[in-house]
View 1 (cartoon, rainbow, N blue to C red):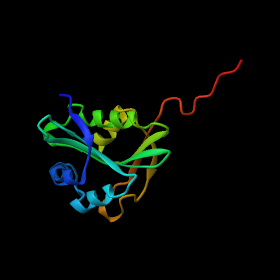
View 2: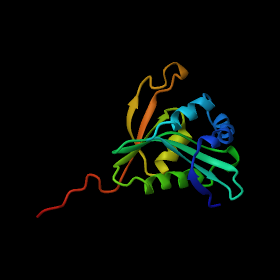
View 3: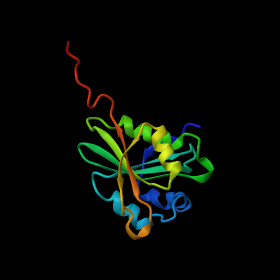
View 4: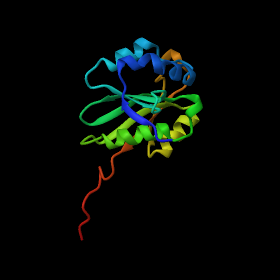
Length: 156
């Protein structure tokens, strides 16, 4: 299924809360979404059916150099159908002059690590204590680098 992707609005937050709650041990609450989306440089995307049923979402922070995926989840009944990969592909298409996308994944979240790896991300760092008291897990920093960022001309 090819999902319709559009900008996530604050009015969508109530609709994505079910996805959030079924996806994480320590889910964001509605105020976390509203806070993340209230800043001008932050944005979100939502994947939905033609009828408007939310399937997946991503929340992104950005600056002139990178996008940072701070939250991404897919509805349990729609997982493993390429919808979240479609969201990431949309982000990659929107990189423009930015150089990379980064995210942080719990080291015990093997499905999350494999998901990002299968979408061209690679582990760049282990950050101990990243989640503070919320979790004993450390975070794996992962990055997707735009093609040819570090390429240099080859001279004879």
